[in-house]
Amino acid sequence: MRKTLLVLATAVTGFGFAAGQATATTLRVYLDADIRSTDPGVNRDGNTDGVVLHMVEGLVGYDARGVPKPLLAENIAVSPDGLTYTFKLRADVKFHNGATLTADDVVWSWNRYLNPKTGWRCLTDFNGDVGLKVESVTAVDPLTVTIRINEPSPLFLANIARSDCGMTAITHRSSVKPDGSWDKPIGTGPFKLAEWRRREFVSLARFDDYSNPDSEPDGYVGSKRPLVDEVRFVVISDPATAKAAFIRGDIDILPRLPYSEADELKPNPNITISAQPGLAATTFLLQTRDKLLSNVKLRQAIAAAIDYDELVGSVTYDLATSNSSLVPVASLFHTNVHQNGFRHDPALAKKLLQEAGYKGQTLKITTNKRNQANFDAAIILQAMLEAVGIKAEVEVLEWGVQTDRWQSGKYQIMSFSYSSRMDPALNYEGAVGPKDSQPRKVWEDKMALDALAEVTGEARNEERQKLFDRLHAAMIDQVPLIPLFSTVTAGASRKNVKGFVSNVFGAPLLWEVRKD
Image 1: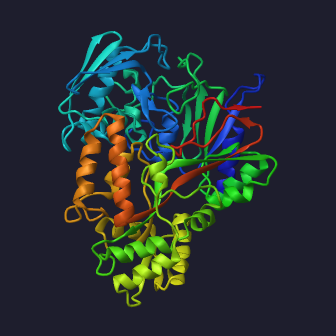
Image 2: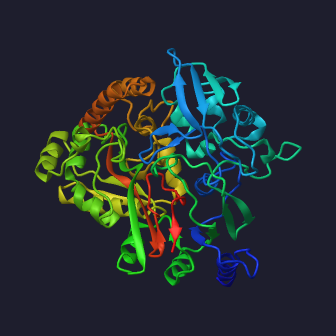
Image 3: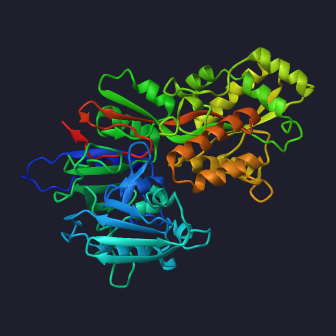
């Protein structure tokens, strides 16, 4: 604990500005673990992405609802056959070293990503290993780039904007050392790297020459003005220490909070709580190949036994509302159709149990305590099932063991949260598939497989909407899984911090944030 407090004291007091200078504005943001690197999409995790994407930008990024839109590109044209994308770059965009962005920088960055020696996280998504292949990246003129792919892919732009891909960021070639190894990100983002003191803090300095998009704030693609001199991500491994520092005012922002702590901090007059439904789903997975749960009427009975408003309100401390769809509430594809989901009906549940021939066998609910919401949901489900006559027990596993069970499909009911995916088709892709070759999949109905293939290859939003509606209706009928709510990101900031809000990405966005 003494070492943690010493690190915290160093991180929150050592701003690095010389004596006699005007006081700089520093925004201190809690980070529960150090970043892994500063190389976009390489040796990364969620914390790394959240920091690095303040320094770098890609041709496209996600808006506040998770829709890919132009970022470094001013506009994008797609050829009639869907194979050639032409990106017209914004003029006068500057790198952190003062150089002007050109098409040659885009070509250099893409060539580096597609080189296996780089170790890019998303290489197999673009090199043909799993289908899609980027065949060429060509500079047409100083502000025009074409990218040619081997097959039409309506999700191509969505994939290059992904945070785990580092937004396929365009960096200057001086980001690497003479031997080709990574040095530091020379990007185009609103902040630039000032200092990384490992296991203590990452300091980002305001980039005064940032070329700000002429628009309202909108996720990663709208206005992104740097309004403080420094953003300092302070690494504190102990959550209790971080929380105490925040309450004292030594930390300005806690970007991600457990639901219970958000509820606890809410009454504090010096603190603002921000909550936003995200793009991930918290669910109950039902193993349709299980001897008991292969009976659809039993699965329907389980769905009817759940009081969704009560469960979701209890688990999230009323931060979320129930959502029985794999289409997130924040998505433009979430319509009234998706609000027509599972309904609490104890009488129907008992009737379905009789029709299923249920004889009082015990069902096992597998969960973990790493994600408190998963554990709480499992305990509440057990009580609700027993209220209609279904015997259930809760099995609590270490997170890694539960993940192995999920991957192998060795469970009956699992309380589980998926990771965020920007397009609803990718949410369904996480659940739909053949169990023989992919045991982690939960839904292998032929209609679902066909509809998923269609929606993944469909570019027209009207047709995609019809397919998402069809998938939702079939899921409600067949009950291979029970979505509960779109996982909420909850964050907290001190009252003197203005402009910080939680978002669908679950990562702090610290442009357009000031400190009074």
